[in-house]
Length: 278
Image (tube, rainbow, N blue to C red; front, side, top):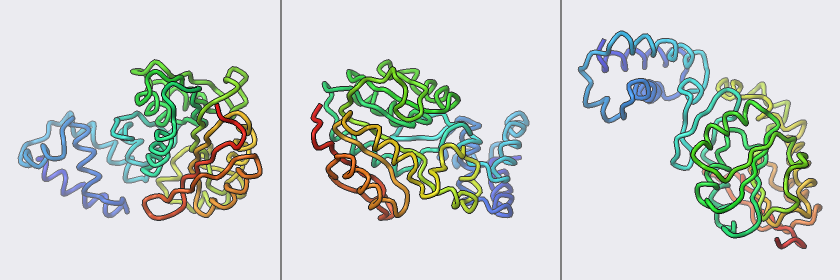
């Protein structure tokens, strides 16, 4: 089977199984298996694929057709221009989380107090900040030991992150004060999870379920962080901005701004502690 024959036949197969962007999906999968770029695939349309590579690709195609996210099938994705490992133990990074990263980066003092990434998951925020500020001490927590294993592998080339298993900020080994806390916590209301796209339902429920109103963990983090940090930057779910703003103000934060995502939905909240200026 040639490259073009495989692309065309699998595009049809994915279309019949309601896989979004079927042509792009098989191009990305084949490029990953062959360790080539998509452009190279187009330049090699007529080349015959070795049976060994077809054997490797077939189970991946089946998994994607059954609704497993492409990122889990391939085991990798990109965030902030960096290739990262993802497994079914961690949430798949979304583009809007890069907005959270950008806003945090603007406020961080490279020579200041440590930064904390709460609910680090695959470690994307902690790793990106550690690369940006190599002289800064970064702490990253997650309640899932399996997620922390993934995060540590993604951080293998950086040396300024301390990963701790913790329910939000409860680990006693954490410092008393931080200059910045970043958090992309579970924020989907429990009752909405079963209605999500089938791909999203493959992601760990622990990383999705935010309780009855989606704010359970955000509510707890706002309370835990009060008096311990100057800046708090969080990603929010749809329609949660006003409630999160009220929580922050009630805990002594002054709201700085709420930023939209790429669709215009209020997604990122950045707040400053009124009396804490570490």
